[in-house]
Image 1 (cartoon, rainbow, N blue to C red):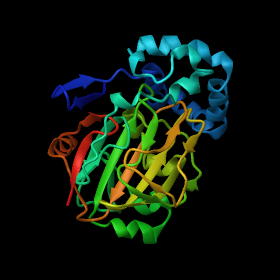
Image 2 (cartoon, helix red, strand yellow):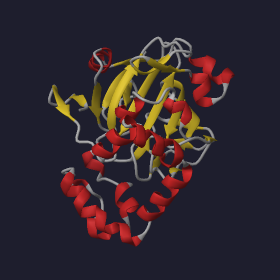
Image 3 (cartoon, helix red, strand yellow):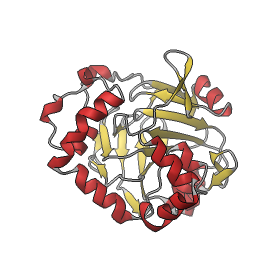
Length: 295
């Protein structure tokens, strides 16, 4: 059972996990773990399933998914009948008014929908994955010089469940450099998997880019793939100025994670997010909502 804190209702809720029985079996049973290492974590498995989700046959999954997870169709920019395949629905655009953006230059917004934890004054060699398991920023991005720029900074981890809106956005005005791709495996990023696989984020396929933000310094964006995520699609144009809230990219089917790093003394994360992180809970957030302030 995964509980998270809903910032709007000020209450704790239980997450309805897509494929929860499959996840428990895969990451908890000896046979499941064997299949995980032999097949499920491999690129081929995710590529094949991603190919199915790109096909017309996968349209049959859309209605069931909407009903099972109570997804609000009124938020869709297009009617569900217009989606050509499951991935078309999964990476759906939403109406602008359902994700309002705070354009105050002093306000830090969430780059996407999901469940968030945050850490201040970080030790880049001892970043917390879950209690008892850590990883290093150098291993995550395989760039020691860049990693050292974030000593004592702030780290935000945004976990996107399969039921979430899967496009991610820029948190400020600025210019983003090219994306660097790092090959890896395709473990799930669900908390069930995070508790079982050491340095999971450093094991999975991931991409990072340096965003020169007008108000929050040089922000390191890291997009982490997961099981069945056939692709991480970057839709922005490198070295071209972007506006706060502009789309950066999207994930195809599967749970995914965005990790952000801020340099020291650039941002102050909202107290409720920090408090819930200390207490071991993620906070549910939506793209565009306030999560911190400029220092």
